[in-house]
Length: 328
Image 1 (cartoon, rainbow, N blue to C red):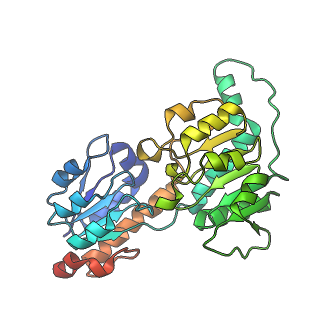
Image 2 (cartoon, rainbow, N blue to C red):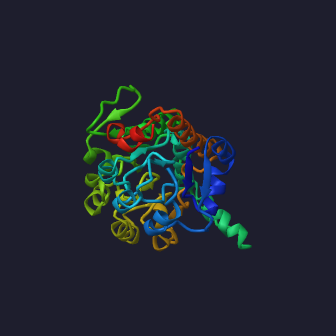
Image 3 (spheres, helix red, strand yellow):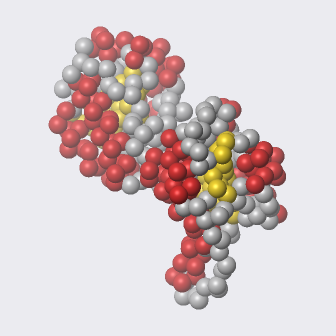
């Protein structure tokens, strides 16, 4: 029977993987991270030394050192879709398979983006905080989403799903994506400059790649419509946080909502999240039972496939998985 190490710390294990553990136990011998924190690469190498497979939480990087110093390791299964911090080339050189989870997070992340937009528009959090502190909130005037313009940068799985929701709510939806053609007649595909100039809400939903770092920087913020809002539920590195802070200070940026940032585990930084005019959540986009269970189940499916001599679904480098071939 395969021996599997699950990297999720105790909090993340309960939230993201706890309900799938019995099923994983049915197909493998399971070892879990018993600490309340994320392991360093050196700690992971030691903890998983006698394991065949690593099931990785999104906060556990797959560094070259891990693959080079784990001679027993057959596969590194990321229990998420993002593998930007996994050194796939190093894994391939070592003959280790890398695989990722199913895209089950789309609906939950898009719904969170909508809730953040509504919070910015109607000051829900501000009024709630006032009430909980024993104060009568002022009557803060809000904005109506219907009739507003939303600009989506990146028409991938989340972007296309969210575009449909926003359009059905009566927003004009603009899309910028140089890598795809938008076929939905309700939407308008535009240049980035045009999107920034006219959108009331700007939502960067591009993938994390070297050329999307600081996709929303000083120049882009300056080009945005005065008083418009920025909503980021994708990746923290897409946004220049220092530039955003300055735009909030000047009043040019009307509001910021963020589920991601440049703190640990892609969470918003306290410096930015604690400011007036900011609505923030701690990287909760995929934290629904439906998504967490689906992604955990996808890793169980992959372990079961390996056990039965089959290449797991959603494998990234199957042609380089020489250790698996030898194992089978």
